[in-house]
Length: 210
Image 1 (cartoon, rainbow, N blue to C red):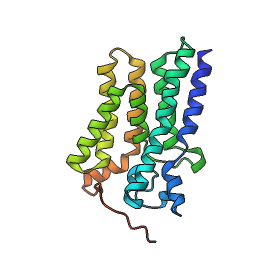
Image 2: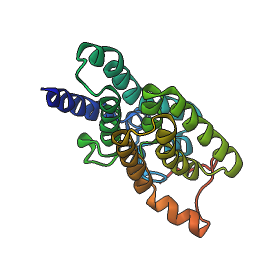
Image 3: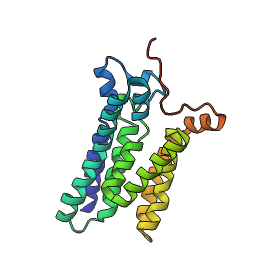
């Protein structure tokens, strides 16, 4: 019977994730954000193409679409269905939202890289892990000016943090490995540019005149 709830949160989480904030913000500005800059609809690309205000709107949208579903599962579904593995189903919900963000069915599976969505899911799941995500991201970005490097280290960090804050929970560890794998995989082009020294730093703008 509990399998039904997992199917439910996966479907709902995925379709919440499919709401592409960056794409919608771009359309309000008369463009498809995926045609500019890095070609994805995430916060960093919106920042480079459309500026801080629209990037903030994108970030909030991308964060809320995992944060809210995970909180609902945590405080509504899990208390109502005590037989559920509460921690696991929360992470499954967040991961489904990340997959919706990365591979949105309505946009031919061409979405963002899922960092804001991942971090927000972690914050809703366990504020300590969410705080670690924030500290890593801010520190690495401030020191190196590379958002991509900060995103990669944030994602890798959750694998370590789950071991620290939830020792012995190998089911949760496996889920966090999935989060990290897809986040790093989505940054594979950035990794190549970091290694070659051609990666863009935060603050660099993109010419939108075509």
